[in-house]
Image 1 (cartoon, helix red, strand yellow):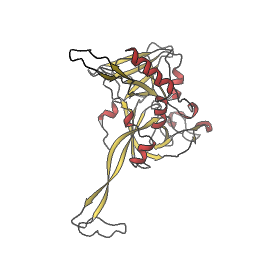
Image 2 (cartoon, rainbow, N blue to C red):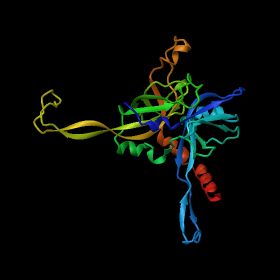
Image 3 (cartoon, helix red, strand yellow):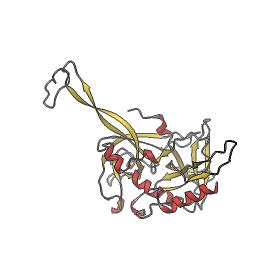
Image 4 (cartoon, helix red, strand yellow):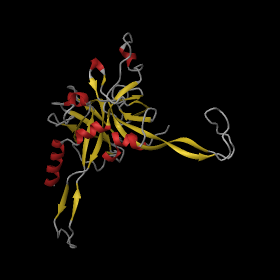
Length: 303
């Protein structure tokens, strides 16, 4: 299934220096746009005596918590494509402040920080909060097991390119457990399960789900069959499954390793094919935590 080209533009690559002159690209990140604090404008700002308000949007860099933890206290790099076809390397400082889930950090493998650069010339799609498939939207849109998912991210085997070339993987939503599940070393996590191959470099990648909708159709020939294989009557209304709106479902965590006995070189290629991902509503809870909201308000009122 062809996916929207914008999905490939939703990701950035994260690199670490490890005492090397050039960064080694290791993980994926994405940007989330959050409405800023609304600031009232005083009367008389222009010749018409305009009075109004303006909302400053804030863009946050988001990735996996286990990636952010490895970046704390270190210089790192963010690589993103420019609109003119060139590439931009953005330096991340060792004192970068990362924000984790305010009450369930050990269960939610996601982290955010303020995007440290001007957005204007970047060839990048930012994910808006209204795209988030939170629990209410999942119910309203009837999203469930079998719906198509797609992921864009870093392929670590091909990084020596002149610009970011994201890898796209397609699968389906396998399970919404409704409770914490054990992952590696028996650690419990909040996660959905998707059936798609996860590989090194996709940690922190955004996951999108395409809603399946039912459409009513008519047949004039009786060629459609009922559940018993019998032709439907003339002009019978039938239900046809189709594809609906695309939502942001969450972000990748990793995968379960192949069974013991496989060489490391093969393990990545034959992992179990089921991958856990952080639900979008948990990422929203990180972004909406009081400390981060207060910081947004303070910055907005300083502008």
